[in-house]
Amino acid sequence: MEKAYKNCQSCGLPMRHDELNGGTNADGTTSLQYCSLCYQDGRFTHPHMTMEEMKAWVKQRLQSFGFPGFIAGIFTRCIPKLQRWK
Image (cartoon, rainbow, N blue to C red):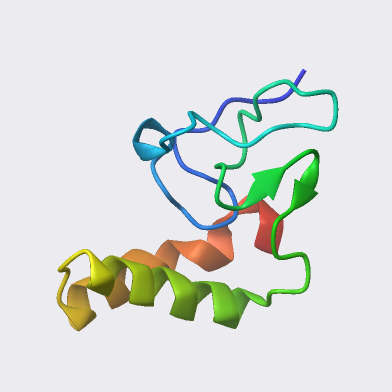
C-alpha cells in the first residue's frame, strides 16, 4: 500500500492545495505520494526534469502567485529531500 504524504514527493506542493487531490496511478486510483501537476496515469508529467529544473519551476510558479523571490527560494530547499530525488 502506498504511503500517504502531506506534500508531493516531487515538487513539495502541499497535497491539500492540489486542485485534483493528487495525481493518478496507472490503475486510475489517486496517488498519495505525488500531486496532479507532477504525476498522471502512473507516470511523471515531466519524466526528464532534473531536480535543479524542478527547483526553478517551483520558484517561478510561487513567484507567479506573488511570493517574493527569496521566500520562493526558501520553499525549494526541501526538494532534494523528497522521495523522487533520493
